Image (cartoon, rainbow, N blue to C red; front, top):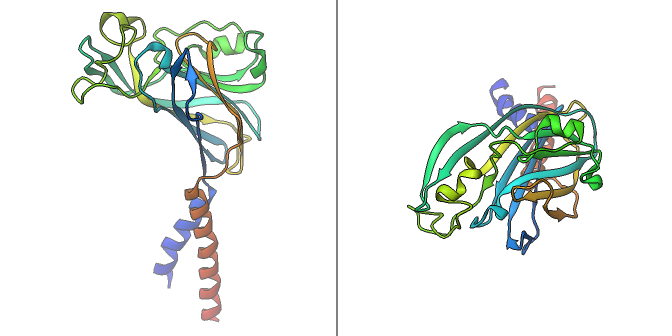
Length: 249
């Protein structure tokens, strides 16, 4: 009997996970250029994992994904536990060379309070063009290097960024390099968070200047289908367990 309960109980435990992905609206523009990005928020008790992805073609530094601002239904102090990113540089040909496959993003993380962008006071911020100290003091100075997120290339498989301008490739791109290739993940500790926490008021930053270009998403998060499936699996599992108990009686 116990052999049948093991996978059922394992399935039920996954129901504590809640993931929501927020996308920039179709046709979004930043710095006069088309941009596209997503942020996936995965909630568990006391922890939040954010994965940021640049989904658009990156032909200019103005299309680099450089941050996200958001609010949560359960608020509290936030601490960056760890982060990960694949960092690269782009050659003059448009070819990509690895800097670190298992690198770090080293972005600023915190609760934003400043007169520079007063609309976001009291909201959470994760950004390349700021550091945690500057968020806390309200005086935002860019990180060096900035480590912004590079999206897709418009060239060939060998030289994906051959169509990009000098702000991305070759010596002209050095002021921005190394880039993060396509995505970065941030593991955050927020004691007040539960699997039912909702993320709202998401704004994406693009470009190399703090807050210069924003894309706003006017929607609250909802659980992704996988969350419903896992939660449903947990409910089904409980039903199976109850039936097994009755059978033993």
